[in-house]
Length: 117
Figure 1 (tube, rainbow, N blue to C red):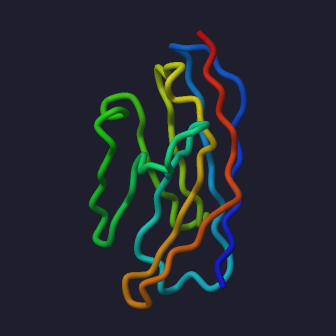
Figure 2 (cartoon, rainbow, N blue to C red):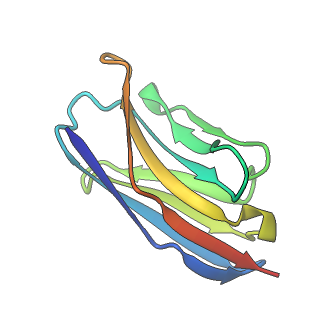
């Protein structure tokens, strides 16, 4: 089993910055992808950023140039640096970790980010 715990959410002003963290624990040897999704009220969950196997990184078009995903393997922690957030970035942000070998994804409980205008 893999456990993910997000932190760092809260209220931020538009144009400010915020960093989300995700602590990954448990049986992680088969984890080869980690990322962040978000779900705004009344909307479907959507991809924000992901680090795939081999270290490839993909971002949603809406956050390119503003958000940065990174991973500290020594600390088993994934980060999402949010610069210049906009009110439309308001959502619950979920951390995810997955295994291509076992075709399984694990999810955190989410952390709420509210961007004020």
